[in-house]
Image 1 (tube, rainbow, N blue to C red):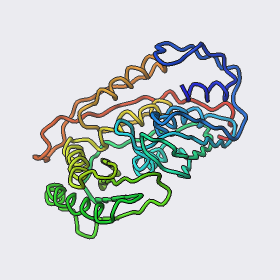
Image 2 (cartoon, rainbow, N blue to C red; image 1 turned 120 degrees about the vertical axis):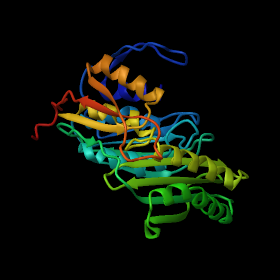
Image 3 (cartoon, one colour; image 1 turned 30 degrees about the vertical axis):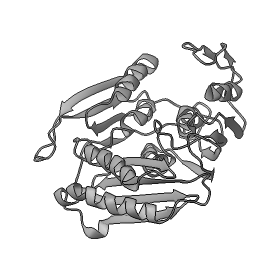
Image 4 (spheres, one colour; image 1 turned 90 degrees about the horizontal axis):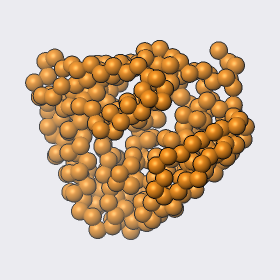
Length: 323
């Protein structure tokens, strides 16, 4: 509802009444947005990252560089974390020609909320297509454990120590060099409350990327956080894709809006991805082919992988005359 209100202001739009339980919304924009600054505030149960992802495609095709200040919560259990956005999604979006910055003014969790993030986006004339069809070899593994408030530094230390032991399967199978395994512990000064967590980012020689994240409040067992993150990391690395299960649906809209043909290798398609494919076919007339395939010479990867072949519609920003 917060995003619908923001978009109504941006486009001076007529919009049907909406609220909790609304299943249909008619949105009729009257004009493109001209303002350079907006605010979007929600209650503590809403994820800022999901709100950002909803409004980002609109900001990309605006008239000018725009900043939106979001207030709400981050790092809920059922939404992408801010660490995921900064370390995985944002770098991948740059492949489409997207230039954005995200300033973390205040960080908190879901609940209690209270986070403040400022997103600045430069408009594009057209997005370029992107291809990632080779998984490559695992080249780098980074483990970042963060903590805030009254959580002792011993907690993130235990998280990293336990995670390294659990990641041994990937390290040995993929023959990852010791110098390419990076461990970091970060004390968060801008975070509200007490928490600890772990972000694992695994990168391959072709630009493939797999990530996992887990966090918990004060008193949560360090090994439990480590186990949750490493289980997902191992699962994604050995699924046969070149991106993780979370990135599948998040980059699809940019592939569809881009000019040209994008191809992405994935592991088994998630329900989120299938829903997004169906929605983009319905709303954009997108031509998306799903090609079943399998990685050769990968005995540890048992499942079929897929190539998503997306023919972009080549959407042009009429507000941007730069060619």
